[in-house]
Image (tube, rainbow, N blue to C red; front, side, top):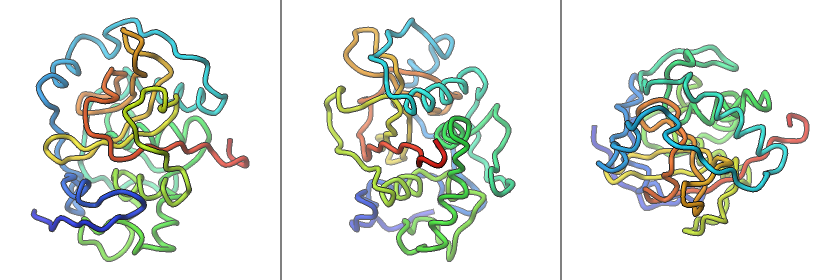
Length: 238
């Protein structure tokens, strides 16, 4: 299903960079985002933890909670399932054994802080639907899927003042930060920065589901970064 590329900025992100995402139809999230060959080899290599990662300096309390909640998904979410599913509202989810990249973030915030991104994104879209990307030919919010789409999460985080500067400097990315990407095939991705460093100690690892379940990989700079966010829980929730 083709869509026109847009050059309009939404929430500080180029929709042209996001328009290739596979969530193009109401009844489908899309296929698992393919990886370039080197990334595919890495993602398939051995268990989710292919090496002993070195810990980074101790993050703040909320960052630690978020990272821990994301890491508990490793070995539990073991597949990538992009099917459109009608889920409960609020706090809806599909079985933990499967999911997409956005589910890593949604589940981590829910488990760490009882913060329901399904409800928050849905309510924000109801209040200002025009502020969100127009990539799926929808006339209104869909609480089953909106929060599970990378462009919508990125827009929500931006509208909450969570956007940070994008950079190629590893020290700019702290544990618990959210990073969005575009793959070489123009499909987008989202991940959480972990509290562990790469084997050479030069980069933090990311926690994500790129097609093979939730894993912790040395892929922070493997694809073009389109967004960088730091979204602490509100005081009433954290």
